[in-house]
Image (cartoon, rainbow, N blue to C red; front, top):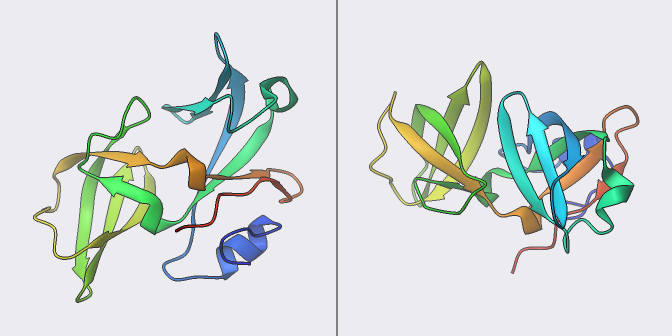
Length: 149
C-alpha cells in the first residue's frame, strides 16, 4: 500500500512525511516519451517508463513523489527543478527540508544533517522510477512507482 497505492487518497494517507502532490498535464514530446508540465515546472518522462506515451498524451494528472525520493542539491539530470529552501528540520539521522517555488511547497527527506540554509536556491531532482501518476478527476492510479530497494 505504501509503495504502490491504488489511488491518491491511500498515497496521501499512508506515510510520514506525506507524499508530495503536483497537478499537471502530460504532453508527448519529440522522440520517445512524455513531458510533465506543471505550473512552470517541466519534467521529461522516459518512454520506457510511461509506455505507450500516446496513451497518456494530454492527460490531466496529479503526480505523487515521496519525500525520500527527492534529491536536494544534486546534479540529477535534465529533470531538475530550482527551488528555495524554506526550512530545515533536523530529525537525528535525517532532516526534513521544506522547499518552495511560485507558491508551491514540497518536502524532502534527506540523510544526515545537510549544510542547507533557509532562502538558499537549490537544484531538486527526483527519481522518475518512483513517480506515481493519478488521474486528476478520479484519483485512480495510472502508474505506480517501483518499490524501493
